[in-house]
Image 1 (spheres, rainbow, N blue to C red):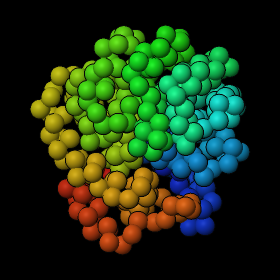
Image 2 (cartoon, rainbow, N blue to C red):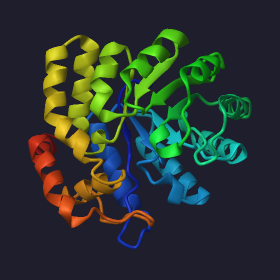
Image 3 (cartoon, helix red, strand yellow):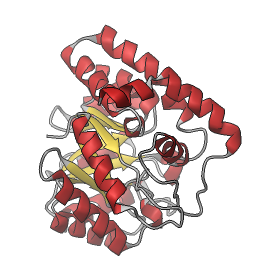
Image 4 (cartoon, one colour):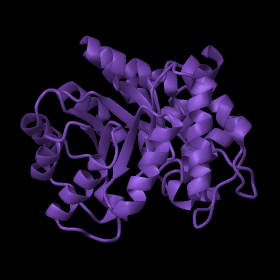
Length: 297
């Protein structure tokens, strides 16, 4: 059910930081027309940590309603509090999402057994499919493969978004967790390599900007057309890199605004992309053929 190019969607905002529901609805329709395989809402790229619980529920509910079952919807529900994570996950389940993406508890620095108990407790208090999310560069917390292997035995924990960018880490998870446990890349630069090694897709930042190409990349890789997948990936590589000139989603939201798809808003403590980076990101957009891609869609 969850396979291919899954966009880690931005949350469109007006200049004052208020949520732009119309732009969100339009973005969802654009992604569906561009063959995005699933939408991941209120995750890192969606600025979840600056959204209130009510705002998160509203965005999730709006997304589920707009998608109307055409593609899967996955909600980011992880926090650094187990009880809060349970509540967010229950709310997302109530809103009708297909799965939840649960990041490791940030800032707390729990031990591996604490991570195991955290996820086990969330699973015991919900009945929706859960996807683990490991991104130690942001959380100061690394979910190790041996802990993932333990968690994979819990039937509602169906996979992991692995965002270390380490291919050997991905291979280790594939080898120890069995074929029914799904591995997703959380690092656009290495996503194709991980898919070719056996991953089931990518939860992608780049897909915000180039949804059709990210879908085609995944499809080519899954079908064994490695040459085509590598060609598309080479076109997108400057974008994979430049979308992290500053903290995600700063460059992504700036690019989408330049493309005329969303307003300019972003919430503190993040700020709009610094002017010194504009040229680099524009060059990456041109190299990826983004203007032509939009016209094709």
